[in-house]
Length: 321
Image 1 (cartoon, helix red, strand yellow):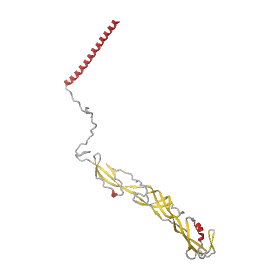
Image 2 (cartoon, helix red, strand yellow):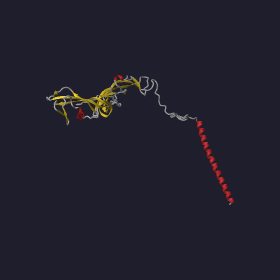
Image 3 (spheres, one colour):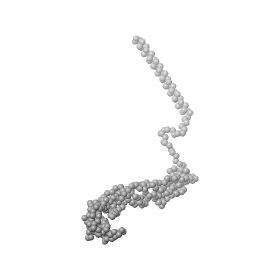
Image 4 (cartoon, helix red, strand yellow):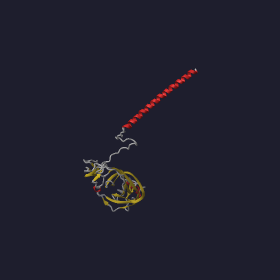
């Protein structure tokens, strides 16, 4: 019985990073709450500020701190690895699956993954002298022995199998182009088996054609769960003290919006115009009335002149006719 085992050389596994699955954030009954960044351990979380000032000038004071666990679960990613099986024969196939150790950078854990075979290639062809098998002669001392359809005569000086090397390989299911029998010798003295039959073993040895099989295993696998941490910080609003404005600098009035700038020469909104003296108002009104009468008189005079001109032109046409 021939047993050929290949010793694998494990390679390094690589794979793309994957994202986290974070817990839902929950707000508390506080004036203001926020979470810190997420860290690998509670010791890495920095101390939160005891007080801070908001954008509107309000001041807040730290009310409570709560350590929140952030579980990362359900992560999956595709990983691949390479296994080299040394000195394999042509009739040996790479295993369909391989169990590999994988390092997960995110969780900082090592885990085992069973990956399916993706591809295999052979390289480094050569002959290896580790081929050997045992042939048992039953009823040792008989006139002849049967090997398949062949009858082999008994030879007390040796196994008498040298001329039947091809038949031996055929019985083993091996090809002559890949296996060579180079010697056949007795392996110990005759003995009786469990049935009392006299037997003797012969040892055949030689070499086989071998390659190094480079097998690639790949597939998507589940990644280990792990936990990270962050800090929930709850703040309460600090009421302004006496003499301190609700917003802005203490003791100063809050700056208000000045609005858009007015156009040059325009009267500001809500401003009252300056009152004029009575005599100046009478003079301005009288000048306006006099100017209006003067325009009316000029219009009447011009109309009368046009009528006179039209009458003279009519008389000249009648004399000519």
